[in-house]
Length: 45
Image (cartoon, rainbow, N blue to C red):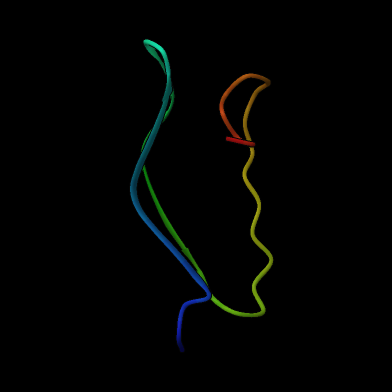
């Protein structure tokens, strides 16, 4: 099955603060996917 979304080795920083470090994931069509984590962990980044 083809992937709908594929992200590899994503890193996001704000100044010297790393919000996301080396995130890799994929989402197949028709699959419900979510991110869980504490406040300020970079989920919406």
